[in-house]
Image (cartoon, rainbow, N blue to C red; front, side, top):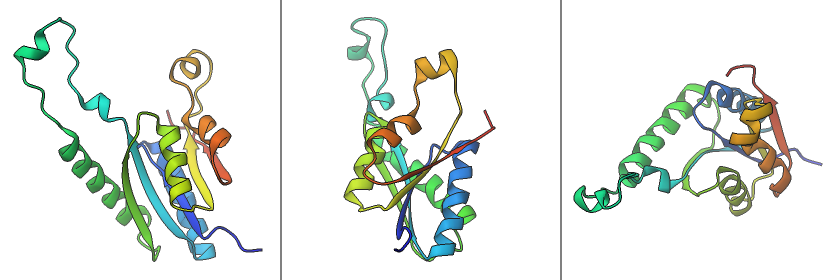
Length: 154
């Protein structure tokens, strides 16, 4: 039985997600696996929100998606160089999806990933109820095993 050959590491660029990137780097070095570094974002959050009815017609709406994706890809490349520099094969993906968890599972399925490594922010109580847990939803719906790492950073 062989270990994972393709590891997916979703990141939100938080200190907590750096833990998962480091863990994936260790696993990839140990077992010669490929790493896919992923950032999922909701494009609807880039659209200006106008509380006043009719204000949208006064102010022209600009599509910020291309420049946002360029910036996100640059951040992923920087993260790859800083934390995954020793890994031979690293793929960087910026993916649009309204749900981070579903987007992660979608990329894991399409990419034929053998494992997902992600961190959890460790939210509990009201913040967990209001914000939810991407890690929890990924664990429930992933097409492959998921290694979750609880971060102490907030």
